Image (cartoon, rainbow, N blue to C red; front, top):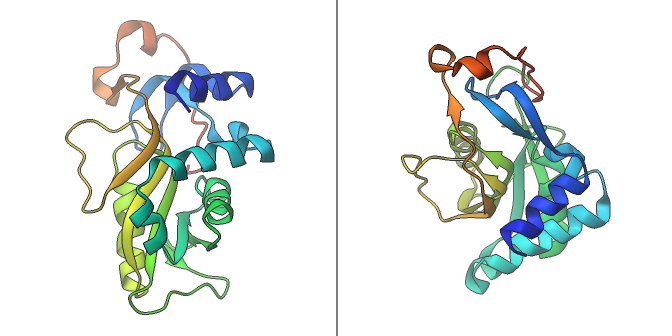
Length: 192
C-alpha cells in the first residue's frame, strides 16, 4: 500500500480533517487524522492492518506472541493487527493517569509483544506504554502504527513500523502562525 493509497483511505472515510486542532501531545496543527473514522469500516481496518504487517520483517512477525495497544486510539488497529498475525490482542488503560493492563489481561514473563498505536506524534505515549508492558513482564520487540507524525528527534529502543509518515507541521501554543491562531481550536482526540 503506497502513501497515496493510505491517504485515499483517510480521505474516503472523512478522517483527514483540516482546521485548528490541539493534539493530545499539546501541540497545535492545521490537520488532524481521525483514525477512529478510518477504522470504523472493518474491511478498511483489516486492509490497513494487513499492509502494516506486510511491511514488517518475517522474522519479527514470527517472534511476536501478543499484540498490546494503548486505549483508546490503538484498540481497533491493535485488534486488527492481532487478527492479521493470528495473535491475542489486549490493551492498556490509564485509569489513574498511568498505563496498566486491566480486565484480566496479563503478560507472561518475557512474552514478546508488538505495541500497536494509531498515530505516534511525540512518542511519549508509546514510551509510557512500553514501560507498562515491561512492568507487566513483557518485552516489546517492535512498535507499529498507522501514522508516524514524529520528528527526526524521536527515537525508540525497538524497530518502528508505521504504515505512513506524514509531516504536517505542528506548533507549540506560543508559536502559532497568525492564520492558525485566527481559527477556533478543536481538541478532537480522546484525552482531555
